[in-house]
Length: 348
Image 1 (cartoon, rainbow, N blue to C red):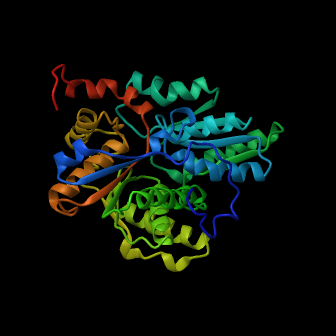
Image 2 (cartoon, rainbow, N blue to C red):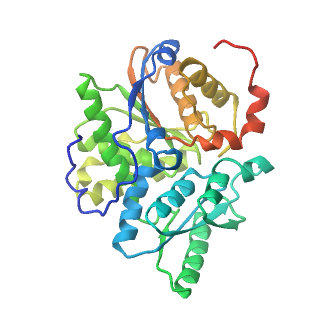
């Protein structure tokens, strides 16, 4: 079992997922790229098809339970993995759940609006609230607060999981802990990593990974691949969140702004939209390793890893850790957009 990290124990936590998740080698995909590739399988966290947000929700819902809440409110994109897992976690704890679905993707079809995570939200019995804006975090959070007041008026005790970066990054603690987990797994095999690659969206997984690695004395570069906003905006967000997390565990000296690395070379045309680099990454992972990646997060993160290898930022022969953050229900919501790229022919 991973050693407990100082500073974490003061935060309420409820165990929701399967941990430790597997650390798997990807020999075929790694060989095709000329690296030694390993995958941290946080798509296997267990709760309602899993994903990285399970680790974050252990702290959010731990805080909710400690505050006596009986209702969780959260906002996210229509196909948000976070809201699906918040619904699952709330139900497992006997809590009610309200989900606000933001319009972040302007070319959404009927399948996007009814399949994948939306289908699971409904199956879990969440109360869904449409929100017409997709790029205004302050407005989304204000709307959640309005919903929370309605819950209170009805006799409930709401707990809001905010979207904006002006609220404490409690969920990021999940990846401060996770970094220790995968390094214990690697050390048990007698090695370390030359690079870590993850998707960078809300920035909590990215920032938590960075602080978690530094907390255990690992100086390995952590490369964040932009999935929600461009590199200049994302860099500032990761800097803020990482500094906050270091302060939260009473170790502010862990944070070094020079260690924050984000790339947007595979980001366009924007959040939730596919491009040829993502198509190639999703296809290569599936056909080389039977490793399934979603188009929004892990597909773009793997596309970023491939771009880093081809540009030389990640050197040939390096041992690289890819954090698989899950999101697999989203594959089905993107079926119509993936179809033109699929082939009935075999091969890699």
